Amino acid sequence: MISALLGLLSAIAITVYACFSTSGNHAIYLDRMSVLIVVGGTLSAAFITFNFKQLRYLAWSLSRVFTREIYHAADIVKELVEIADQLNKNPATVNGLIDGVSHPFIKDGLRLVANDFDPVTIENIMVCSITERKNAHLAHVDIMRALAKYPPAFGMIGTVIGLVALLQNISADGGVAKIGPNMAVALITTLYGLLISNFIFIPMGENIYNKVKRDTQIRRIIMEGILLIRKKEDAMAIQEYLNSFLHPNNRTDILGTTNVSAKQGISKGKRAA
Image 1 (spheres, one colour):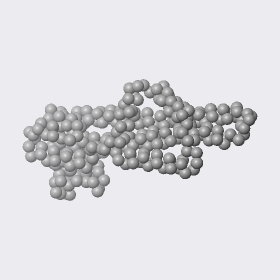
Image 2 (cartoon, helix red, strand yellow):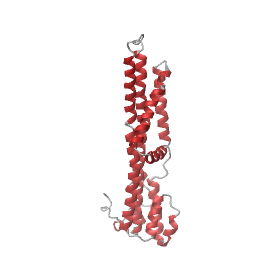
Image 3 (cartoon, one colour):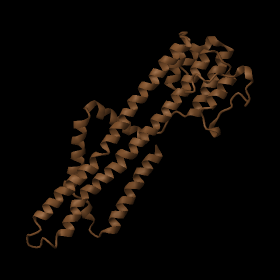
Image 4 (cartoon, one colour):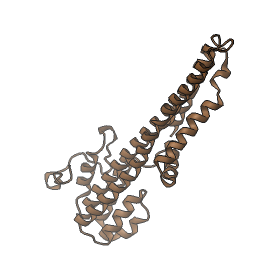
């Protein structure tokens, strides 16, 4: 997503500007040992906590942070209503619609309808699919939140190591005069740890979490639409019901009406929870 990339670049630019503006010695912010302690320590802790397969999928999830979202709830509602309208006019065309839909979950649902599964079975299958997909992606969020704890911790470890070395050499010739510069170097590891945690793991983890929520909402809309299509509900009623999942500004009205008669109403009690 453009906003994610823009946010990351802005955070880096602001930090670099602050570092260059507050110190005449810019090289003090570049310390190889600090990078080794923070980055190496974080990777080591990650390998202890998670296996290679989990971390590999995490890399895939991180790539999603900077990709544009393909599906939008309003477009999905519009597509489901169009499908319902076509099937109301000609139920035999369901097989022909499967390959032309945009979302793979709609395709899965239409296959179940085409194979004449009963509504309860369709709902059970689709609920299970939504739940398992959500849990799989939330596991990546949990990894990100766990990894966010490590860089600041290793930053503090590096700071303690630097302070121990500083105090050990304070009695040497010129040791007192070097307290300030040596203290600054010792604190660099803490800075690195905070930057990595708050620039990468925390915001990107929340980005993935928000995308999981939106994906789950879209799949629930699809499930509700497929169930109503299977029950042969009127397309107008399906439109009104699915619109209730959307913000008022995003609701669609492709059938050219905003009113649904009482006989077309849908009982929401069972699926409102």
